[in-house]
Image 1 (cartoon, rainbow, N blue to C red):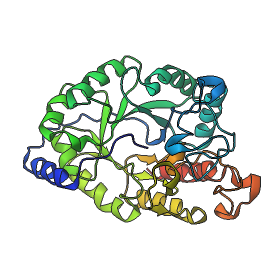
Image 2 (image 1 turned 135 degrees about the horizontal axis):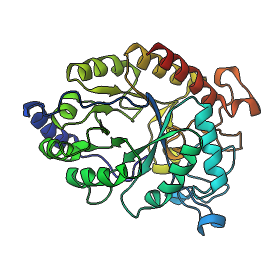
Image 3 (image 1 turned 60 degrees about the vertical axis):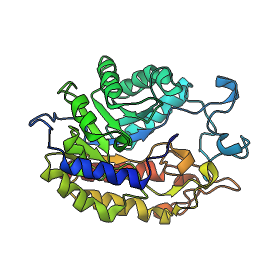
Image 4 (image 1 turned 90 degrees about the vertical axis):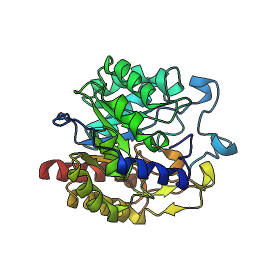
Length: 331
């Protein structure tokens, strides 16, 4: 998920205090209609055939193709995000999942993810999918640089922007930057603090992190967002396991699909405006719904909703279609 770590708790507490004291500068009637479901997408993988080396699969000293930086193994094998056939297959999966939009990870101009953006836009639009940009904490990022990024990305037809880790900058700087953003764009802050998001001039908040922001927090979070006239976009996910990628000892078990069901149910009960899925293919953290296959030494989707073997590979894609359909019909 991340190349950077959020600011320490002590710094966060200072920012929270500032957000609480700052006036709510978010303009009224700024939020346009748009996609109601999105899925976080990672275009950063590489293979020797396409990229000259394994990229990301080899994180944390892993030795692909037999040992990779993931507890799971992709059903389609290790792939390059530059491979047009892979992109087409990914878009087919996302369309099959019933999700309307993918939010692609983006680490600034000239980054690997930026270089892959034109191909992602083309493939997604061919599949009838919308594309949002997930603006990561790239080096030198400031609220002003994000506002400038949005101007250029809007020229590519992007309307939705998800800003990860905004609390690393003062809320007043976000308010000034967001005041310059095209009112036809939607800008979301990754935070559980509705006061910060509103004071910073964001259109809504999203959570992304399925460990910190579990199902029990959704109802209160969305109620707080509504009080601040913000869109509430909690993120649901099947589980979490980043041990092989970053050595994180925390694990959120998938429980044969019950974890995913519980998060979707909580988001629907909370009357979420948008539901984000963490993630399509963040293999490092084990949050992916992309098809995975059974392989010695790796976890699989075997047993999810009673499915076994080959039938289980698409278990999470198809379960997403079930829940996205219920959410969209209900809202």
